[in-house]
Length: 316
Image 1 (cartoon, one colour):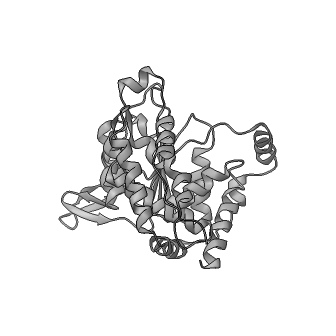
Image 2 (cartoon, rainbow, N blue to C red):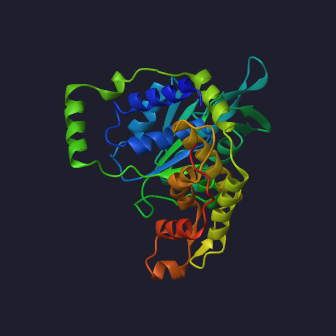
Image 3 (cartoon, rainbow, N blue to C red):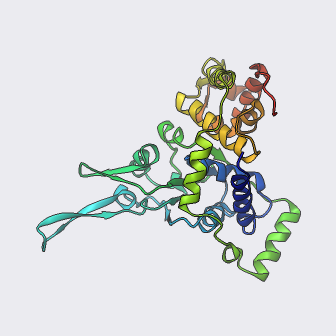
């Protein structure tokens, strides 16, 4: 493992920690998802720091960022852009939408209509946007950090399964601990935490890290282990929807990121175990039997992790 890469990852985490207090695991998982060319969905109640997390990363990584508050009146063209007629040139000109940036914060994504939500499908999967038959590539690196209010909150619309599947991981920040909340009050009183964040990387560094992580070694037995975990969700008696092949691919990609963060150039089963819940939970759907038994998605995934035999590959 290149020690410079490890140091860069640590430097980025330490900068973001200046503004996001007491959520180290969330910071690390978010960073690794960015470095694995994935997208992040954060589901939580308002006011726990979801937006602050995204803005902190945009500053620490020197990434151009845009933020959109998704409300019921937001149109797909607001996200993707639109063509307007220029009388002087007698032609149509494309006006880019808010999604044209490196880090797009889609705030409260489940408050807007399904039609507007679907505008994100192409840009998340293909990292391009097609308007009036013309395809425009998005800048690299490109990441969507979307936040949503808990399902069932007033004014929310469930994200379709096809869109949920495009998020590499789903996280929940949760309330801070007592001591951390005191620290938040103290920090906010004395300074503006976001203003204290220094840029410790840029798009070229991020791309270099992304390329390195993409080439992390994965043993054949690890591939088989990941597929076995996904297959177990598809055959589970309490699930009516299991993990898709895209979900298995996401598990492999983020496991490589975990390995890199731990200073290894190869994946071990512990990397998979660490992140599996965050990758799988939003991709499975409980059936009526599970709901009647008050079984959660986390319970089922933990049961699968205990049942499926992990290969014996240890850190060297």
